[in-house]
Image (cartoon, rainbow, N blue to C red; front, side, top):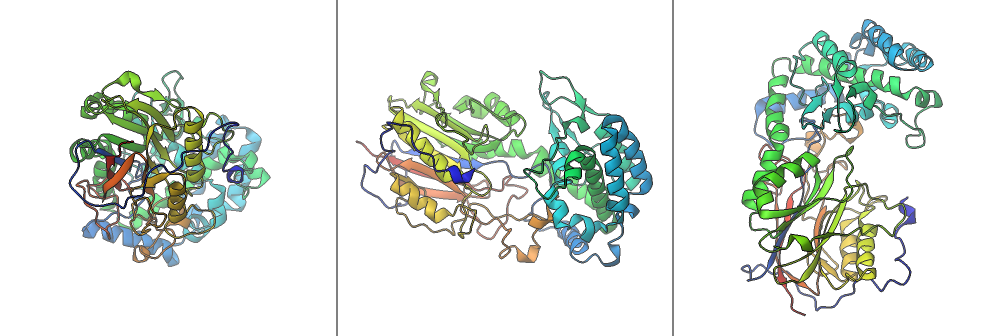
Length: 536
């Protein structure tokens, strides 16, 4: 799909926003009267798994646990036993009996053959966890993604009994206790993700895996992908329970509970606290990857009292990752002036998921018209440049090109250029050519080492091909240490006064600190800017 971009502007559209003001280099001075203070923040961070990223903390127990897990995976030795020694034939027989009731018999028979001839004979680390082909088939990571933590319509969360989430209901200190809880959750527990749909068993949330998207699958595996996901998912969870109870039987569950309290259960509250206290001076806040429950909660709290919370006109309840724009009621008092803009309506096959982009116009207290946009780019950043162009083209074509534009985004751009990824420097040069500037200024060259992310995945997550050894956190290609976040604005309307990054929640950035931390709940820094108004 990326090859179809950039799209052409609608027929008859005027040229998209050209440079109309002299350039100005950023300077750090006192905030001028009437300045616009803005901040952008991807708040998503950890996806329900408290062990997913390396956490910066001075804790011997945590560091010892993660080092032992890494050693288990890197050099298992005689601990790399057969899958059937961890997820036993008796366990498979119980699972097969249930699968024959809920799935098509011929598909279950195919899965039984795969178990007997293949899966049970593999070793748990080299043959299963680290097998690249198995990873490419997504047979273990897909069911984890769907069932790890299920947000329900009533606001509660249903969690699969697993190491890599915050499951609270049973002791996972033995295979027997885990297996009993796992079966009950997958086949007996009913969940309702939408208020207008009846509750259904968890296993019914699984979706078929298609060869068209994951070509490593065989035709037989594609046909039987639903019951095969159940088996692969059970094996994956069993291996992690076995590994954790092998390396740290007394400490891993208390540590997980502590991490969950800080990074998961308390994540929304801490995120709101940072926005309410540290960024109370902001006129505009751009947020990305927010859950619908978070948006609902801030509307009812202090942020909702101080800001108009602009949500996407079309959100995706399944992904539940939405961009928001928060407009200060003091700076933008007239709620009736806030209008959604469908900036991609004239485009076909736009590389944006519902909820990733929100665009709205609003008038400030003086009646000056503005456009604000918040966007979350795809992982490789390939949608960022064409979406930026599409936004500009839409504004120009629909009589909005004269509005003052401010755009906060997680551009997912990268410090080092490589094939298949959007590099940060060419993106900066492109937006400058289009008449925009950023927190880097209005010159085409930028310091790509002003990072806004610094994180790396551990060995306790389903995609081990992305895991990074702690000692390699500065050099491994899978370390996400990049300048990903931007504040863009029309340089005819604004002059950059100052900018800041924050990975502590206190308007301070610590360069060598991986994040999230127990006090900063996101894997993206807050990027803020103070903009002086330019009178035309």
